[in-house]
Amino acid sequence: MKKLFATIALGCAAAMATPAEAAEPNLKALGLGNMKVVSHEVAKEVRGQGGIVWGTSFARIGPSFSTNSYYGWGPNSASGWNISGVVTISPFRAVVAGGYSTASGN
Image (cartoon, rainbow, N blue to C red; front, top):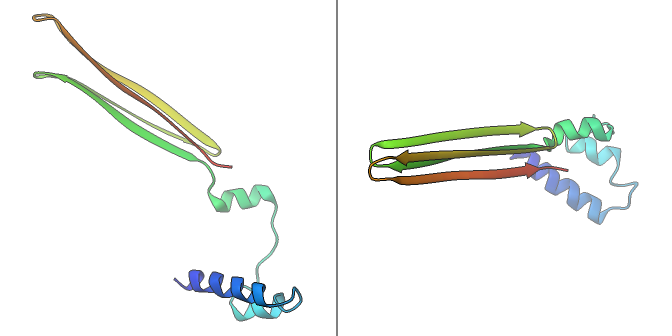
């Protein structure tokens, strides 16, 4: 909650102040005086941009069933898929279920 208020206060200070007024003294007053500029690669780690996907498929005919799950993770994107299927002989019946998902971050 403190970070939320600090972010709002910083935004208000920056909007109402000239660039010189919104600089170091105000950042120190908000407890952000030790902030440093970092590279895009380092910032990506902090922002947590990436993808996580998961899913489950379930197929059932009477007492017979099939369940499959997947999980995918990646630093920039992730995807996964699965298929579950059940076939009975007498009487002949078939059920297939599946899924696919993908996620990505910039």
